[in-house]
Length: 77
Image 1 (spheres, helix red, strand yellow):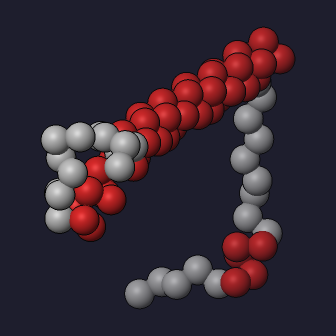
Image 2 (cartoon, rainbow, N blue to C red):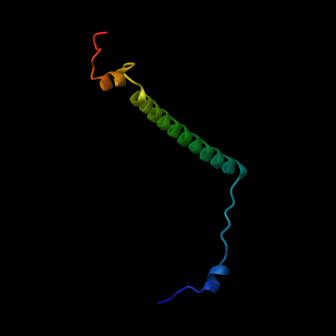
Image 3 (cartoon, rainbow, N blue to C red):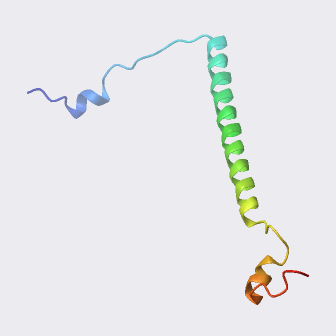
């Protein structure tokens, strides 16, 4: 079986790709747009999650937790 030597990996011919400036800028814009879309999606997900947590933490009635401690003695007041 043939195994490439370490020497060959250092001196292998390099590959050069020539791209026009316009194509490079278009690719950069596309990558930036994808990053922006990804960030906006994550912001929306986190905002929804925060809103859900706020609803869970908001008491449904002021003093409800105290009424439970008192055994709901003054529920008609």
